[in-house]
Amino acid sequence: MEHKTQVGDRLAAIIEHYGDSVYGAAKKLGHDRPTKLYNFIGHKFKPGFDTLVEVMQTYPEVNPSWLLMGKGEMLASAKATESPKGPKKPEPERTHVYYGGLNSPAVITLNLAGDEGIMLVPTPAQAGYQLSREKPQLLETMELEMLALPQFSGKSHRAFEVEGSSMEPTLWTSDVVIARCVDNWRLVKPRHVYVVVTEDSLMVKRIPRPILDQDDEVELLSDNSYFSPYTVPRSSIWEIWEVRGILTTRVPANREEAFDRVTGLLELMARDSSDVKGRLREMMDRIMTQTDEQLRLP
Image (cartoon, rainbow, N blue to C red; front, side, top):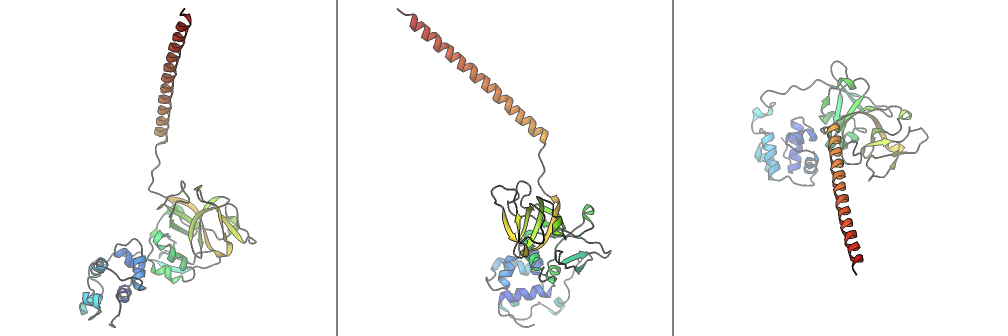
């Protein structure tokens, strides 16, 4: 095993040896995002003690001396060159198909029966998803989870995690939208909610009208009034997905209970108002009585 001069290089070698992606390795280490690992591998930062311990606990076959100082072989023993022992979690059988097309997704995922699954694109993976338009093979290494929702079977679907507050109160951070690919942008439904994938961002917005071939720009609208409408060049848009369902952890309140509470508050305010009016009348009567008595004095 060739000695690696920097810890970041050795981390990259570990990830490659075990067949992980950077995103998959970050998940194994308990990180929400792969950004930290990318920074280590790219030599922007050096991993701290806690991170090195996480690596040794996650990959116990790795030689600590090699990881820390580059001394010896990567694996602690010859036996460790074999695949890690123990029961392996069965991987869902799937195959990636390069789909392509002007407005179509770069890659779709099929099971052995030839049925397409719903690929979940969480927030940490959205940057990689954008890059996959130019490098479709990246999507295969991201180990994205698949959803099985029969009511959304058929035409190509994706699931995207929502981030930010621009679509509140319709959508909230960490909601997941189930969306269907729109091949013909002239069929965009006015003011419907869409996932818009551009060369540098992934957004959930409303599109006010169909997109025609002669349009140079596309207007995008937010439901949150604090966000102003803005336009993006049509040429920068790679994919458009029509939102057809929402997965959320927010449970709506009981509307009847809320109505009863509001009614009760209004009744209480009305009673208080009546009490105040009665007291004001009493005060006015006293003032008028005192005034009349003063006028009758000689």
